[in-house]
Image 1 (cartoon, helix red, strand yellow):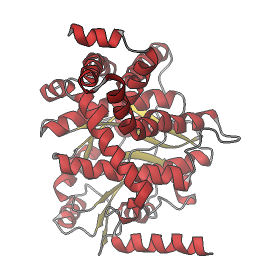
Image 2: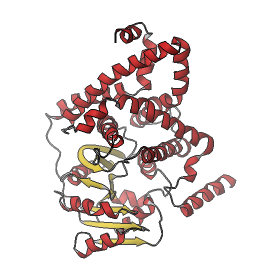
Image 3: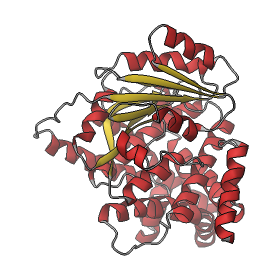
Length: 423
């Protein structure tokens, strides 16, 4: 213990600062403390005016029959009742169609659209949006359930006519299923609840979560709906920002979703997210430069959040590790990393305690246990996985072969890109 403290005390402060940047956790401390100050000032303001908006709900699903009934039940219990609920069975091979049709016969949903073959999540939402008649469109995954006032709270965000999209707060519903879901529960509390809350204050939300988001229907229709390629939630959010609209995060509109239970499933999910994020930000929107001419400050902040706190630490990790070994030598390098981990562990426990208080969530046994290895999970394990994902995208454009998008849709997208380059 004393040896670790001695190593920390004897280390150059610049190296300590970069180490803090590398391992993420102090970033969330800043977010949580900032959000607690924001909460003090907001508590003295009058509450948001409640609106009785007409909300059309769209549930796109592929082989999601097992989670469909709880999702529908949570929608029927909302304080702001949906105008209509539309289910899109996107070529499922399980009992999704039977569950959806049964719900329609029971009067729980208003329309069921069935695709004979899988077309992809974006195509499913776009197809249902053509039949939606509400002022707002709310999309929710079939493995997600809502707290009773989630839709009403999201709809309130649209009191501002500049807002074209809003997303809710997300927790892991199956956090006790495995160690990996327990870690994801802590991760969501840090990266979504804490991270997005303060980004929303400065207008720097970059991505409307696919699991639970709401859009202004007329804007959605004018823009032709979601892009059919991978990463459609991030792409549409950035598109709205470029058009001058605001996108919001509503921290008290809670949804719970199932996270991957096994390590392999988790890594596959994150590899897809990371590859898509890099492709969309770099290739489609050119966001990797530090400054863009005539760019609004919130857009600059959302780009720098990705570059400074995500891209640079991730791509620096191998070089940082080599530098630490050269600087300290193998034995003292291990001691230095252990000292950094010890400090980050206390920061992690402080972050968790503050987050549970600020967001009125009750910690579970799994969450408390996961907190002790969360610094390793967040700062090393997932960062190494992200480094592999980013590298594969840079070197091999791996997202073009992402099986999240049906092969025939992927081939058409790739052919269209090649045609544009040739012309």
